[in-house]
Length: 274
Length: 232
Image 1 (cartoon, rainbow over the protein chains, first blue to last red):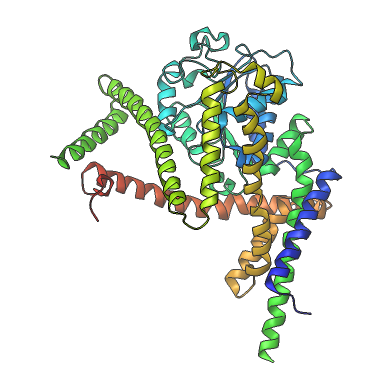
Image 2: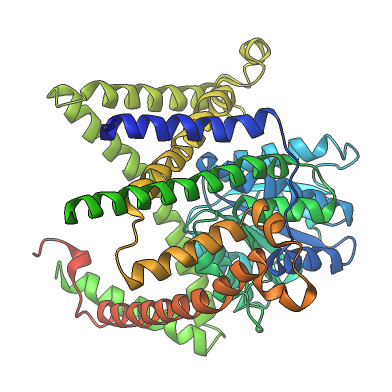
């Protein structure tokens, strides 16, 4: 029986839907191996002393939240575990809401953390790399208030933070431009602040060259796998760990499709030759 | 004058910014700091310009009943709803013209803007991106065919990376002894990412970097003038 292209496509879509949905409904609990890229990110947060102020930049919007939001939650949780204070910024307009949601989620496990003392959301600023450059000179000029309209000088945790050099590390969770690269080019290269981050799996290969001996980038969380590796390192059973089962099955299925596609092409070629 | 003035401005600004990298002292650092503030203000206006353009383009398509005009109408209505809700009741902790809208917020469980963002925009946006998985699966079946040596190499690499980046890779070769750890799928995938991938990426990045330097110099020196518009 010869299937038409549209029927084939429908079969592929249906099987993939099942392959993704079933592990989400009935989690398998497969473990992932932690890569060096993730371990470097973990070590950076782990070795930063308590009470230091750090920046997590939300440079993405809801389209990539499946991969990046678990990273944000895990990094905030890890920073809070180590008693570090988290500044949230955003180079993408929707990053402000993403930051609020991440804080709200982690606050459920850390109700003692207080806005202004342990975390603050400075909001979105337009301008990409130029904004980061301006932050390097004077943070208060770029963010006169936080997203609650509290004046910068009235936020207790920012008392000793005047410029980028005053933060211990910066993590950019990025799904495009502006994102990790802008932070790296300015905060790391100009001000020598350790920069780390996470990105979607599809853009990770482009950032791997920056994780080098010069530590242009302190590790990288690549896609959902990076997020689940980080969750396993901090001992958190988060959404990335659950979703990894679905992703693993989907990848396996894609391999099966590649095999079937090649078998079909090989069979057609042999038929044509004969 | 209409064309000379922007060219002179571009040259002066570009020259001062480059100079400030080598002489980070007064007055250059102050000038650059002011220029950065100007850039942020102008970028803010660019967002406004984008919104005006969006309204004009969509209105034109709706008025002229171009194909699929209903979708453009839906887009405009969505845009207007978010804008009106944001202006009237604000978002998150920021109040709007009518305050924080306690009545409507208690009924919806959040401010109207936040409610729509969480329950409409977020799932729609994530769904649209997730659809890529279906296209990739379909494309893998149709297009990822071995036709020669290059495609064979590509296929082998892709299979190793795909397996290595999943939990299955860990299980498949997790039993290998210490001496054969290199052949463990996740380690093999990391090796491919760290060496062949990084080498190729670096070549691309260096070329792109040189290209950016070249085109920036062309703009500063007034050789490249297409940004001024009006010329073919």
